[in-house]
Image (cartoon, rainbow, N blue to C red):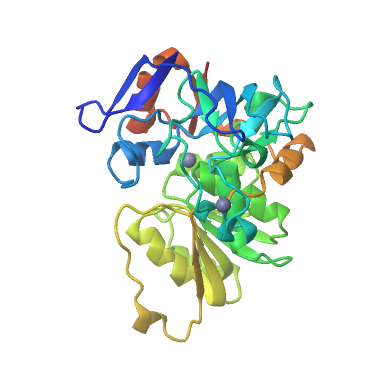
Length: 345
Ligand SMILES: [Zn+2]
Ligand SMILES: [Zn+2]
């Protein structure tokens, strides 16, 4: 089969080459024939050397859907031929962390696919702990409809859940990229009263507006965000989701949160950030960080199936798998207002 291999010692870092098909290694494995995948910013983070645990020579990719090709004999919840979405985290459901729902820290799994074990940017992929890691795609929706369930939609939901949203809370979401927009949809479903979308990328704000994902759309290049938040809320945002990952956005997150609010950080930073405790003293904020615990895939699949969430608009470009190197170059170039790329196999 063809597979996209990460090679940190080469100049290009990735090559599309022939590799033998994966085999069942454990009774709880499944082999999935990939039908669609996407390129995630985390894939770029690996290529750029920001993911220390990433192994050399693995197949990249962890955001995908496919059909079940083979099953280990202890996979009881699925049948060969079923369409499934795959969680970006493979998890045992038995360890200390899994039992608490913290599957990102599963002592036997976590984010392994396309990082420490072969991922989905190949025609076939071995998925460990298939009973927990797979989610059946509802009959009334397409593979494309379900493409983001196991990764960015889960991340958006995780960010919204982290904020312990109470009915009518005002939620500010910094970063109107794919994960930020997923967080907007999920915050609304979890009861947010007002949603404030913040991004310096006007095109992204316009897309969010066209999809009616928020109530306010603020661009820091066009207005003073703190002033706007003060004008439109009584004390500041009840909760803030930081999905952008820059120094300025980290700072903005705690500044626009109201006293005793929650700041949920789902962004991945490329450098350390500073918490200026003297300036923040008395604000009594709660900070939460993550590493998505993608344990709500079934719920998210149901929400898509019922028409309450639709992520199709995030797919702005598509490429055939044979052209995946071009797709990576394109995604990295940030051209043509690209949000997410769909790779067709
Ligand atoms: Zn990802
Ligand atoms: Zn576990």
